[in-house]
Image 1 (cartoon, rainbow, N blue to C red):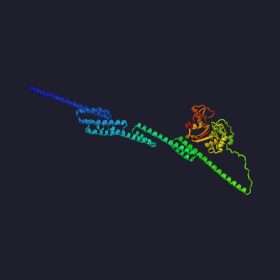
Image 2: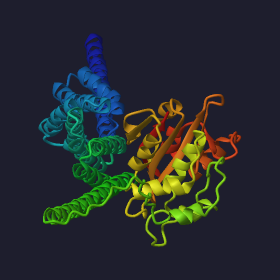
Image 3: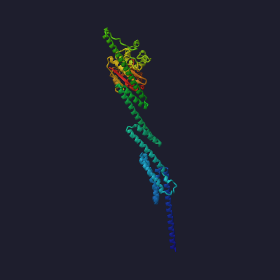
Image 4: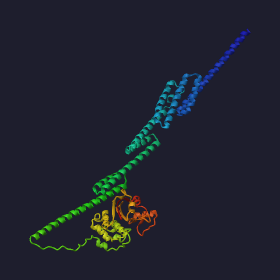
Length: 511
């Protein structure tokens, strides 16, 4: 009996222990499952906030618990989430590295993985939008990568145009890329595209300006070969480009060249008309002589004895007035607006023929002759210009460079005359090699002649009758080493760096 009772007690004790153990085991598994669900829930919640890297430790812990519980289905569900999160992280890394095409492809795969979560969770026990985990982020990034791809495609196309020197097309595409970047707030890309578009605009301006300068040079060549009408066509084409560029200095230069060529054409036409008139007069005289001969042959034998006297020289209209004005023939004129230079008249008497207005040509010749040690009264210089067809429109626009050149040639000097010298020579070197030079340039109001000598002992140029040279001399702080004139370091710099001087159109060097 006692033995039976002991067996029963043992069985009951074992059953109790087994039940307790089973209960503890079941409770432990329940705790593990609860922890697994909690870790998984946290992984889902964190991923839903787009903190994908932070969600992975929780997902990994949930997976480890599922493996301990032997819950293959739950482990499969967790693997789906881990696969999705890792794919998103990879796509983000590709995106951040700038590999937008690979990033876009990876985001598309991630989008498929996101949709698959519903397959693994047909019944959502967690009350979380599992199918929406990362989907908004993925969709947004797919659209964003498409924008980046489009932007860089435009940049690449613009770069190709730029390599081909098709700057206008490149500028347009860069501007399109800048707008595209602005549409998705890609500030860095917008700034880059805008900067490159500006570079293209600069290249376009440089090309157009080079084209305009080439046209001016071609016009100068035609001008030098005395094809004045053709030169005007080139100058006009250059002017149109300068207008397109809003380059007012270029426009002014073109207009000045056109005006100068038109003045010469008008002068040549006037000379031709004068020659034609003289020919007609000669023909009339010949006819009268023929008639006289006929009269002689008809019995009139009276003849005139040829005169051995030298014909009286016919002076110009201003010679007597100019001769009445006294000059110190040893001192160059440094300001044509002052007496007595402003009293000298040249050309027509329309109120604009005095030295202050149109005298720079004869003043330049007068100064040069003084520096050469061969002074002449202004009356003789002006007279040579007036009687030799050297005045432009009756002197209203001053003197032709060819008339000044002819004056010094007639006086026996070795003269070299270069038109538009900046294009073909170093002006400073040419003046250094001469005894004295006369330079003509166009400024924003008209043309002007100046006389220049180079003093080798001082290494300086002395410029006479030029306010710009005096301003430069003052700016450079030079001490005036001449009683008159301005001391400067470079005539080329004077022309190029003076804002109201457009270009030089004549350099006469005298040896």
